[in-house]
Amino acid sequence: MHENPPRPELEELITAMGAAGARICEIDASEAGAGNISIFVGWDIEVRRRFPIAEEIALPAPAPALAGSTILVTGSGRRLRQIHEDPEANIGAVVVHDDGLTATLFTSPRRLFERLTSEFNSHLAVHQDQVALRGVDFQAVVHAQPMNLTYLSHIPAYRDTEAMNTRILRWEPESIVSLSAGIGVLEFMIPGSDELMKANVEGLREFEIVLWSKHGVMARSDVSVTRAVDRIEYAETGAKYEYMDLVAGGRAEGLTAVQIASVASEFSIDSRWVH
Image 1 (cartoon, one colour):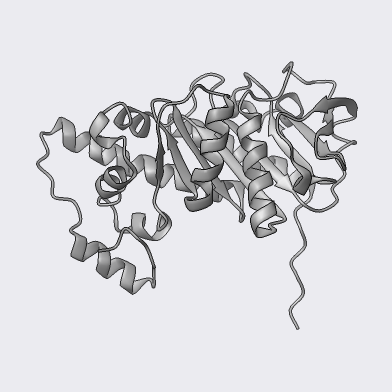
Image 2 (tube, rainbow, N blue to C red):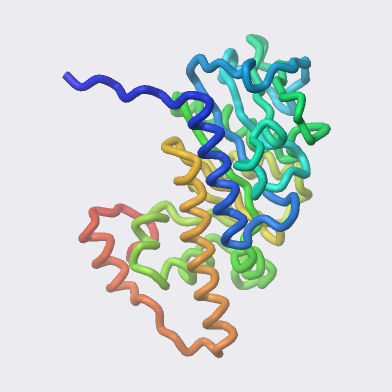
């Protein structure tokens, strides 16, 4: 009989958020205060020793499935590259009340933000949707602004899910394995808007990473926050190859459909992008 592995403690979770933030910055996907991270924790976790200041807040969207649970989330305007240096200055812990409409926000005396990230509505709505639909007890969500993916979304021919996946999954054998569900492409919507929140939730039901055209990406993982970052990194690497090929005049052939299919077969990958 196998015992379930111990669940991560707060220290491990905020350390992982710091590592994820640093990596997002290393790949030039978070200039200044751009980008944000949240982690949904579906088990009891003590946050008050690290974040002792409590205030009541109204949630930006109803989240009844998250009642009693905790969400660790970055503050507005904070630099992801600095999370690991001082987590308490950059992160808040949101404990959702039973009504699913309000919560207690726990922060540190060293807090350097006035409010949570402006994209908190999208983070919260994705956590609510995935917990309600799939019953996950952990989920990480990362929003970043990778340069090459965002640039491609400024080109009308790429602003389409079919076209984007056809172009960027062809550059590395690992892509079809790590991004087997592909990347969903959304049209441009106002950052932080209800319209973007709703479209993002729907996109992340089908995909594990979506591209917000002319803005950035959001990725999710119910394994770890670094796995969500990995998805962004693989997608951005494919986009970088695609940009390089555009600049070079489209001279490279990339992996053929047959080659991609052979990789998928070898690794038992079932994907709509394998033909």
